[in-house]
Amino acid sequence: MLKHVIIIRMKKADYIMNNSNMAPRYDLHSHSTYSDGVLSPTDLLHRAAAQGVDVLALTDHDVTAGIAEARPVAMEVGISLIAGVEISVTWKKRLIHILGLGINPDFEPLLLGLSALCRQREWRAMEIGKRFEKIGINGVYEGAKKYAGYGVISRTHFARFLVDHHHVRDKQDAFKRYLKRGKRCYVPCQWATLDEAVRWITDAGGQAVIAHPARYDLGQTLLKKFIGEFKETGGVGIEVVTSSHSHQESQTMARLAKEFDLFASAGSDFHTPENSWVELGRLPSLPPDCEPIWESWPVKIDNGKSTLMH
Ligand code: AMP
Ligand code: MN
Ligand code: MN
Ligand code: MN
Image (cartoon, rainbow, N blue to C red; front, side, top):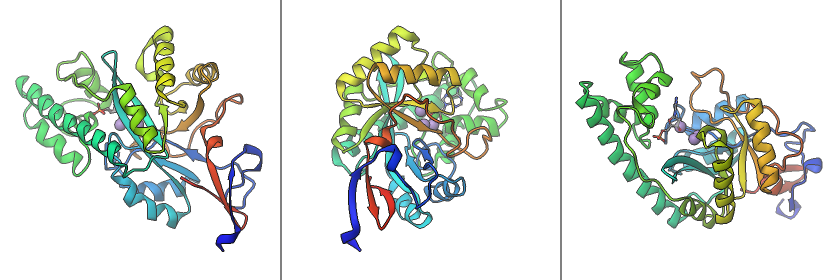
């Protein structure tokens, strides 16, 4: 069997997934219960398969622990799993997310860096709890902690607790009133530097990609400065298509990808089935003149069936 295995560099035209002529469906950004998603990696993979996803990246915030659970399930349901992570970065006092795709999730320097970020998250969560207590809303830290369970604690868990206990109308409202930068219960935090995040990812064998670049309100000049620095540190991709981007924003990011010679990525940023407008694998196509990041990936062809090598 092994003698039939060949490894090639993929080109769009000759890439055939699962013996079908249909273009494979990619979703390169998703979350599980190991961070602020509500589905376990097992349930996430089953849902992705039901949605016709061929290639899924699990990209939990600052943690890679979900990959071990996801791997055997991906094999079972016939999905090529891309081991990923979404790293919190502080750049010019702003929180930026950098995706790592195709990483070795057990690479020691990456794990060391991520565990420092998780300690920061724990500290910040306690501080957020104190801020709520000061304004007379008690038990928020304990509540959020319970929602996080074994996962890495995030502001999303605070938002879910606040919604379920009728302190706010919905998650957006929780961020708008309390959790966003500048709001009463916002606690600033020092995350990884851009250089550290890109280095951890690259040294772990992965590709660094700027997550949802239109979400940072950087303005054109600062965004270009950021992309320039990202590229200098070794970053190779930019998320062009994602659920929180409008059509116009995707077009802008496609132009920037071209200008900075970066690969284009596409991912839903799926967190929960409750948001009916964000679904695994349900994304517009990349604009035509983009270079999809998966075209840089090696593919294994075994008796006519091709699988990504990550
Ligand atoms: P954290 O990583 O703990 O700072 O939390 C950031 C997470 O909160 C993001 O990954 C989103 O899932 C979620 N989030 C951020 N801003 C908003 C918002 N305005 N409304 C709803 N969820 C948000
Ligand atoms: Mn999130
Ligand atoms: Mn993000
Ligand atoms: Mn995300």
